[in-house]
Length: 148
Image 1 (spheres, rainbow, N blue to C red):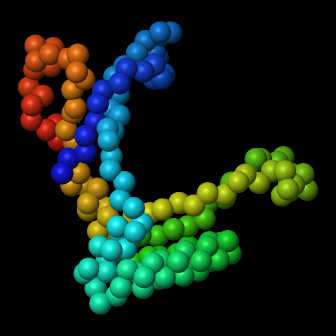
Image 2 (image 1 turned 180 degrees about the vertical axis):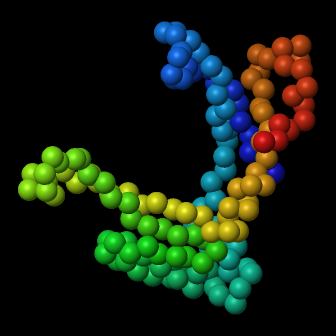
């Protein structure tokens, strides 16, 4: 199923844009959210596990991942991908001037998708949703999905 998007006019942030220039950008529309419970039920239907077993596994998984990430380790989650801590700081002119308490930035967690998820990403297609005020004369040939 293609991802639906609409076109939204916004400020042109490109390097040589003039003041007041605008461009149209794609914005996703109506992405459905799959609940945690629904995901666990789907996994349970394809395995010998119950939904409660799946939830317990995810609970333990997030607890252990959290511990390893706090200790600076990357966590490889099989076909899902790899989670790793990312750190950064402000700069100091000398090593002696560097102050951990004030110069370290808040760490983030980076996710690198596994092969299966990367392949899914490559197969995503898009379809444009017209605004109600658009007419067929304004936008020819938009009936079929725009695949990218």
